[in-house]
Structure formats: structure tokens, C-alpha cells
Image (cartoon, rainbow, N blue to C red; front, side, top):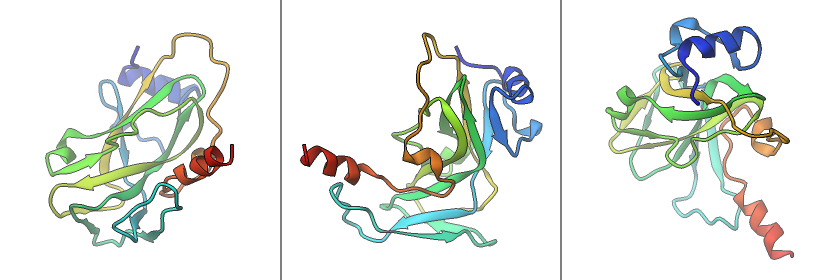
Length: 178
């Protein structure tokens, strides 16, 4: 079951959902608009090998914004720290930004139960597009899990508040050493 906007607000107020900073004006009928954080990462190579640690260049988005270009994957992050031990977060793009040609969270929109953090965002454009730190870029909805909750997500991604590239290469190393 998805939470309505008024229920998201109520759960933030009682501490069951963490959104920091929280702005009641960003609450929608069944989601919350999140904003783009201060940093963006670009992959330094056109060829990405999942067996190797990706090389990325991370920089602060200047006040005049940053232009993203097609045929490239960028990583950003949410301005807000978002999380819950009781509700599952799902981050997607906003339709108004999608209509500008930005694809956001194409493959990894479902979050895990666990501590609040700034989420890494997958960004891809179909034409050059300028983005600004602090702009409303996506929305997060919260879902009530059904069943016993016996674990919370504690893996490496939750301990980062900057764009975080894939750690898939680490899993491949573990698999090959077995």
C-alpha cells in the first residue's frame, strides 16, 4: 500500500520517515518531490568493465548549472537525506523533468528499509540538458511492507551521501574467489 502525501507528512512528523531537510510544500498527493544535490559524477572512460572499479570524476555543480550530454551516464545525489525503518522508499523521476529528456533512476528505483541517507541518482539524457543543484528532479513514494521485517539494509551504499558508483566489481571478486 502506498502512503498518501498527508500520511507521508504525518510519518515525517512522528519520526517514522526521515526526510531532511523537509519542506511541506514539496509534498504531492502520494509522494514527496526530492531535489538534486550539490555534486555530480561522470565516468572517465567510455568503456566500463564490471570487473574493475569504475573511475569517476566528481565535482560540485556550479551556480550556472551543469550540462549533461547524451550517450553518457551521470551520477547525482538527492539533496535530502531520505529513509525509513518502517516504509520502503521508491525514487523515480518527475514527469516534468522527463519531458525535458532526462531519464532518472531507470534501473534502481526501489530502496530498502534502513537508515536515512542521500541517495545516488542515475541520470541519462536524450539531448543536452542543463541541471541545477537544488532543482526538483524526482519524487519519492513510501510503501507499507507486508510481512515480518527481520532485517534492514546496511550495505555500503547507505553510508555515502555523495554520488556513489557501482561496487559490482567487489561482488565479482568475491564470486571468483569461491
